[in-house]
Image (tube, rainbow, N blue to C red; front, side, top):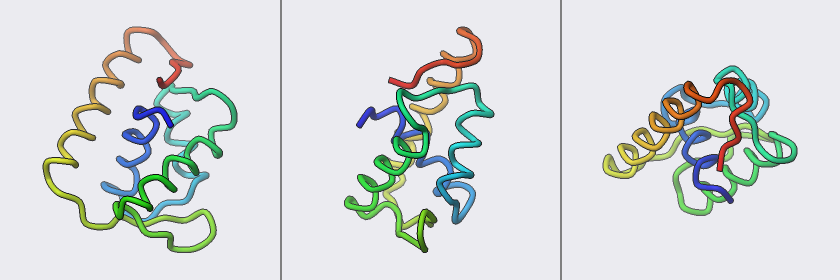
Length: 98
């Protein structure tokens, strides 16, 4: 699982409360990012990984809500996403997350 997808996905549940996979896929698209394969599958895989590490809880089918997270982890995720957004801004729409 690319760490970039995990970082980007975690900004949804961590900063906006409960979210479903469709909302996260729309957010990914609205920011001009693309993933290899189906976005819903990549997001689902990323959330499964985060769930196994206790960072999100499943709140229903395809719906997730944030769990507690160390501030240092949240900071690293935020920093990674900001770098991805800056990189994508220079490369135009459809930037692939790696």
